Image 1 (tube, helix red, strand yellow):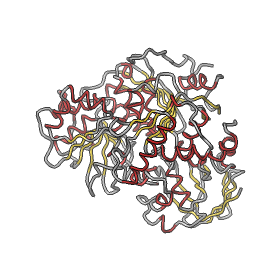
Image 2: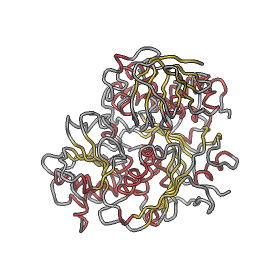
Image 3: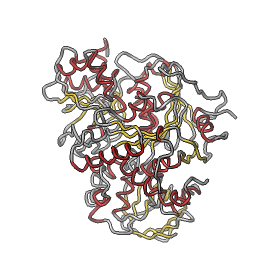
Image 4: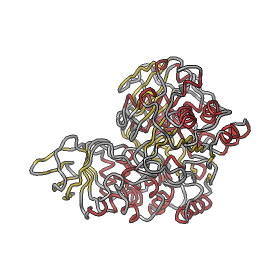
Length: 413
Length: 162
C-alpha cells in the first residue's frame, strides 16, 4: 500500500513502516518553545527529573510573544529562559530577533523531511518546506526535551489540489483563507493536509509559509506542501507521496476563481469574499505575525501605500517577522515607504497578534489584520472586532479607512 | 475511576483565547490563571465554579493555541472533568498530560447544574438516569492519566511505552 508524505516521514522517524491511525513512538529532530510555553516546559522538564536535555544542539528557545518584556513579571520569565539556555547550552533567540517559526526556517533548524515539535500551535508552518511539524503543549515538549522522542497517532491526510494562476491582488493568504472557509475550523481535526498543484508550485517560500501556518485553523495536526518548485539554500531530498497513497478526502480548487478572502469576527472560518464586507469602517490596521509578517508581505503593503498617506482615522502597525526581514525591508526602502505613509514599526515578534501587548484595540473598534486568528478577545479586548485578510487587504483598509478591495491597486477589480 | 460533579454547559468551538486570554498566560502562578478562566465567555465562571464541577461543551473544545495554561486554568479553578462532543487535538493531549480527565461523547443531553457521573475506565457518563458511551481513549493516554499526568509518568518510566 502506498504512503502519504506524512506516513513516509513518520515511518522514517519510527524505524518501521507506519500508516494512518497507527500509534507509534518517533524520534524528533528539533524542539522549540516560546516565552508563552517555555517557562512551563522548563518547570515540567525539571519535575520529570530532567538534568540535561537529550541533545543541546536540537533545541531553541525564542522570546517573541511578549517581547520586549512589558512588565516585571514577564521580565522574570524571560530571565528564566535565558538562564536555562545558558545552563543547557541551547540556542536562545532574544528580544527583537523575531517570531519563533520564522527563525526556525531562517536559521535552518527546520529542514525538509524532518519531524519537529514546537510548543506553539503554528508550528505546523514548517510544512511549507516539507517537514512534519506540529504544535504541542509545554508538558509534551518537556517529554521530548527529556527523551528526544514523542508518541503520535499517525494522522489521516486530506489532499488539496490547487491549480491555476492567481488574479492580480490575490495572494497565498487568500488561498488559505478560502481553504479554511471550505474545510471549517474543525474540518481537519486530527488529520494532516497535503497541498499540491500548479498554484502551489509557483508560490514563493514566503507564500508557502503563509499557507502551512493556517493549517491549525482547521484543527489539523500538520499541513504539508509538496516541495515541487520549492527553492531553498540548502540541498534537500523531495519526499512526495506514492501514487497509490490513501487519502481521507481529495479536494480540487480552481485558484483562478479566488477573490480576496476575509475572515469576519469571531472565527477564522467565517470567510467571506471582499465584496461582502466592503465599506466597514476600520480603526486599526496590523501587518505582522508568523502568517504574514515577511518581506513579500511588506512589499505588498508598500505597493499600495507608496507615496500616499494612511487614512487619518487609522493606526497602521507593522511588526516584521524577524530582524532579518526588517533589515531587508530597511535596505530596499520598504521601511521608509511604509513609515512615510504613516505606518509605525513595532519590534519583530508576535505582539498584537496574541493580545499580549502593543496594539490592543479600543472598545467597539475594528482591526484589519494580516494575522491568523480573530477569536473574540484575541488582540486583548473582547469588545473589538478583527477582520483577517492579506497584507494587501490591510494596506487598502489603512489607506481608505474602511474595508476596500485591494485588487484596485493591481490594475483591476 | 469515577467522577461526580455539577455541569457548566457551553457550546461549540470554545477556543483557548476564551478559556484563558493570551494576556494572562505569561505566568507560573496557576491561581492567577484560575482567577481569569473563561472570563471572555462567561464572566461569572470563576466566581461560580466549585471544586469538583464539570465543564460540558459541544464540538471542538479548546481549539486554537497550544497554550497548556488553558486546561491548567480549568483544573486549578476546581474543574474535575471536561465532557465534550469533540476536542481540539492539542487541548486533548494537554489535558491528559496535566492529569485533567476528559471524555469525548458524541451525543448527550445535559443542562446547566445537572449532576454528571463519569466512569473513566469504561468511558461513559450518566446524567438523569441516562448513560452515554464515549470514545475510547488510546491506552497510552489512559496510562498517562492513571499516573496523574505526563510529568509523573515520565519521572517513573523515563520513556514512552505503547
